[in-house]
Image (cartoon, rainbow, N blue to C red):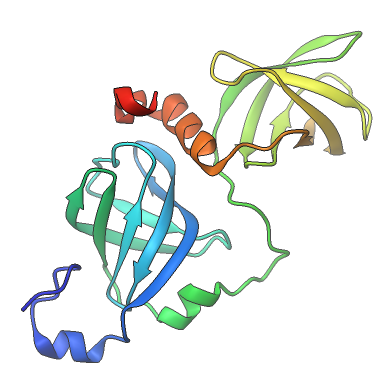
Length: 204
């Protein structure tokens, strides 16, 4: 009997650690882009995920955790916004569950590149986002802004967001949003920018 990850034999099942319930945000990375997902269940051989929009269709796809660890996947079953994947290589479940961190823990980030406008009361400048999280963004901009300066960012995909400049390194800035994206808003933004065909009428 096969399990929901497509395991074909009882010996495979016996060799895999017990199936574990886990609710955690992560991202799916493929040729279509980077997309927010929620890990629902995991074993050493597979994982069950849910997205907030239609699933990416690329055959070559990987799961990336918030700590940057990446696991290659193969889809074995899908139903709406939910799918089961098999790891191409067995995964130590305890390592995945506890997520070892070599750097300070941070929010899930997407390498979402898009043009932005940054404005203040006295200036307006073109910028480019390099990555974005629910709470902030790293952007590249030739204009000069001060640390702790209040700015606003917006484009065709993002309504005006009020931010504060937290750090600056050459032409790169770290922005902290005054109001955070919900995980669902964040996920839909990523799909809208990278692959709008994944959006259905019910979540546009």
